[in-house]
Image 1 (cartoon, rainbow over the protein chains, first blue to last red):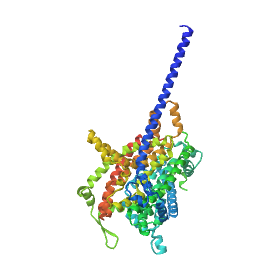
Image 2 (cartoon, chains in turn blue, green; image 1 turned 120 degrees about the vertical axis):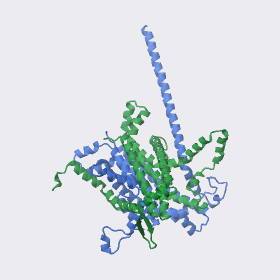
Image 3 (cartoon, rainbow over the protein chains, first blue to last red; image 1 turned 135 degrees about the vertical axis):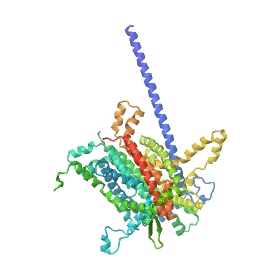
Image 4 (tube, chains in turn red, yellow; image 1 turned 60 degrees about the vertical axis):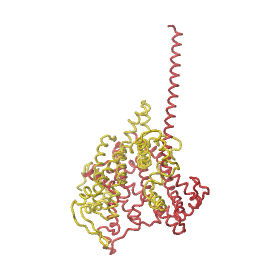
Length: 329
Length: 301
């Protein structure tokens, strides 16, 4: 074999690898494309399942009275109107009620996060006597159906007192019903809406973080509280955002405690929404439920929008927060 | 100054107790009292007095005996609910992990899709659902449930298409199974929306450097999933399993039955006994599941 043959052979190999590489690349691209098509189909399908009823609600909210009884109308109204929105907007007293609700849920959410993350951190990282038993109690608070604690809670806040102090001063016990105070108190003491679950989420998140960062902080002379607020909290941003989202949404959508403590409906937009149909039927003399129902649909959209926007903003913050909280393992 | 020479362990124990102190006070004030009440109710015959208030008469374990042995349906409901919880949980957890991984990868319109997957949390429960239900009940005289309202969103006659399949000669059981799954799919999506968000948060807290390393070392996507993604999200798999169990329990018929017995039949004793029984069973399941999963869970330390 002379040198020229060798060169030729070598060139052929080379071309072979080029062809193989090319083929592999095409194959890889095809695979990626197929995957994204499948992904697209699955996401589209499930999105449709979720959106189906909402599309219906949105479409209905633009119907005018003539469209309701026109059998040839499907999804797209012949006489689209914004009157439903205008009327519901007024009857909900939208901006004022929304502002009050937001204030209420923001305060509660901040309390929830501080208290439950502290408890979660305590359970995740410290050893103390009866820890397992106490955590068992957390689980009991998650599982226990809320209606079993309804009556005692009601009585508790009906005749609220701490060791008889208020009775001694004012002569009677305090009645905290018909206000938001019971909810604030409960949340501040870590017994708010689904607090147990949040403690659980935080505990699992903190357990998933490496111990090294804390130890480093501790060796550098940081106190436990400093470590918690300045080292652990920034690293727990994903969990904080998650809990914020859940806490806000559930608080916003909650009817159980609002009804139990008979909070005023002018401060809770979702509660007000549940009575808006009756209000419109009574005040505006819309006696046909088919037509007053359109206002409910408009109201649902009006109530859903703000919380959806909040979620979108938060989930954007999500990404940025995670980028910053790099843990070097 | 007796405490001056505390060991580090003691110091940490005290700090830990301080961290959980607010929760503990809340537990003592709000839950413990209610728990004691519930236990007391379950052991007695509760009579609502005409003038308000109530009287209790101790009757021992009579309520428990009645719930388990004499009540017409409680037994059946309890077993059915637990059974369906156990069947649903693995499916829901894997489904939500699957969806979360999809939503975590980059594609156009991701924020919008995430918002869509977030919607069931809003629509599935609470005030909005109650409102919609009320609105439809007003029209159809209370017979319509929300599910029926949701199903009419498409104007397609489904029965017609099903008949076509039957006439082609496909086995009826297969069609029934498939339609059963499809009918439940909204339920499943609704039941996994919270888990999807928890998993998304978990996936996003996986450091990107790990994936880089895996890529450089030549790991395939499959290997990356099982060796990097799965261990890193495993602490939250436990959270999600717990949430799924609790959520399906809270929405199960057991709880509604207990609620009805308390607030429509005013039999607080029996209702408390039922709630206690089911709570104890679910807690036991949670402890067992937790112990099993914790052994497989990866923690940094």
